[in-house]
Image 1 (cartoon, rainbow, N blue to C red):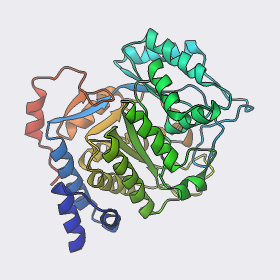
Image 2: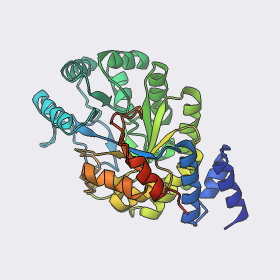
Image 3: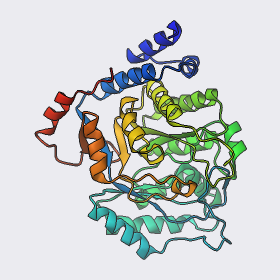
Image 4: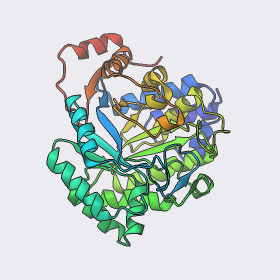
Length: 374
């Protein structure tokens, strides 16, 4: 391996911050094992506990109507399309009750930039769900939707977020980030939030005391330097607000989209990008595996490439699956994947607090299995 790359890996493992140039240099490293060892060492330094986590939630897409046009999306519809929908309230209740019955504590509530639903509609929805299901966290909307609410209702962004928070919005998902450079965003989207606007939604939400996740969808039209720029923008905002709980990245799924001609990024690209993200995002505590797009084996292997969390049981998912991704795991399979990697599975909430009961015997099993990537 190049001595300069090894120096960068050693620097990250020692807890020193990498520069953008150093982050980009890591993409020249084709020794996937070395990247994984370094990312795993950082992950174990941040999470020396014998646990790796998961959560149980459901992604409810309350509408597929969207005024934005995204070349990478196979899910959205226009209002005039025959299969456009807004879910009736009774359907939402049924889906949430099924989630609770499976041990879930959260609903990921996302739709599109609906051109006619006003802010009052969303407030009433949140109040209704919070009153009916007070034990369920509403991980709701996205920066794109929030910015759309702000523009459509001609209200200050802070007021929009405050009103949603007061109505019952519990946390903000990191969706809609794609790649946080305007060149990429303008190339693949129309009528959608740009880089500074996406960041500002999260910034204001954090200033109001809220927490959120951050994401990256890669493997389409971005350069490697733009992947690093994306990570840099997230790290800068985290320095400012400390509001991100976790980072999740996944590869673009081209099937059935306007970018179907783009070859899909494979497991090598996914694992090296996640590993570099773990090395670069020194102020984001948690990294989620993306088994939903990568499948169970690569999703499990991600636990040795910087991830300390297997993500969600994902009782329902419609957006990625519209592009042809069909991976599904049961709760037992998620737990088994964590155990096979040498860790104890623990259920957590969006704030990464354990919400299950620790088994007295499982930590001993984890210690015997060993967790280091060597």
